[in-house]
Image (cartoon, rainbow, N blue to C red; front, top):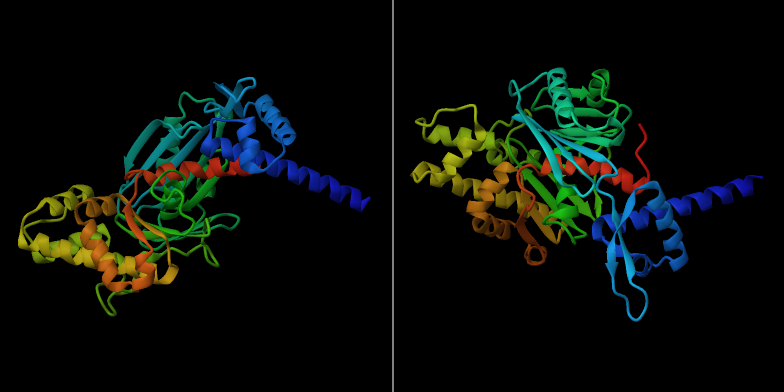
Amino acid sequence: MVRIEAERATTRDMRRRNRSTLLSELFFRGPLSRHDLSRITGLSAATASSVTAELLQEGLIVEAGQIESDGGRPRVLLRVDPDYGRLVGADVGETGVRVELFDLAMRRLATVDEPLPSSRPDPEAVAGQLVAGIDAVLKDVDPATVLGVGIGVPGTVEQSDPVRVYAPTLGWRGVSFDGLLRDRGVTAPLFVENGAKTQGQAEMWFGAGRGAANAVIVLVGSGVGAAVITNGTLYRGASSSAGEWGHTTVVYGGRQCRCGARGCLEAYVGAEGILERYRQLDPAHPASADELADVAALIAADTPAATGILAETAGMLGAGIGNLVNLFNPERVVLGGWAGLALGTRLLPQIRAAAGEQALEHPFGQVSIELCELGPDAVAFGAATLPMAELLRRASRPER
């Protein structure tokens, strides 16, 4: 009896794997014919045909036209049905909350932006803003079609039960963010992850990281983080805190960082650190409530103080990237985040040169350093890929 149950489980598991494999190929590479799916995956034609028949019946995939075949009947193309469900992606940044709605073709359907009330906001207040944003983008959506809500947050996300968020720069210690949303009536499946990691998944799936098995996707905004991809898999570490690149030391005993330590990379290349150093050199530029505008003004300024700060920032950022090259030997480093994009658009040659000065010659000769392709809202986009990844893994709706 035990052996029969094991055989049943094995057959069931294999069926689920086959469904997941075919659905994933159609998501990333579709539309494809059954013949294409069999050839790409190595599954038999009979298996590809029976599994796709199941997926068609369940509405996960749809027919998408025909192509001519070599001497035979035209082949029917298949693709994931964009309207099978809806995905919500949210970015809890250090200056605001963005919530976006997507279909299963990852087309953006709605967006809501809300500024945070302070630089150290209360988690319950942020949860309230998130729920308001989720409700706004879903106002015309059938709740039954929502496959999940992905949320990118600052700091370390411990993937425990419940999920815990540790963001010392916001004053958060072990916040059960999913619990706060549940208490406010959110019933859809929830996926909470560090924002740099959600950006990393987005860039690996659809952006500048696509096709690389070993990459580091870095995020530079108010804070600084990274997603390390090794052999196609996100490296998390023992408690999911891997990737806190911004809190590696670049100057022993250097500038005070928001985390409490001194000399962290974030204290020099994070937007807050850049602007603080600039104002120390040029007090004529007082602090404002708009970091994005202040960084843009700094980059556009043609003064000795601005030129000096930008040169130092490019050097520090390049040195930090050089450390990543030495530690992880990636084939690609992708610079993203709103401040990273602003700096990289102006300073990428200097950043590359500084990285080359700090990195070992051989691994640096094998790496490319590029700007992210998905723009400054890649964190929210990446957060929406979290429930999508669960759909692809299960090849069925994520459980509520």
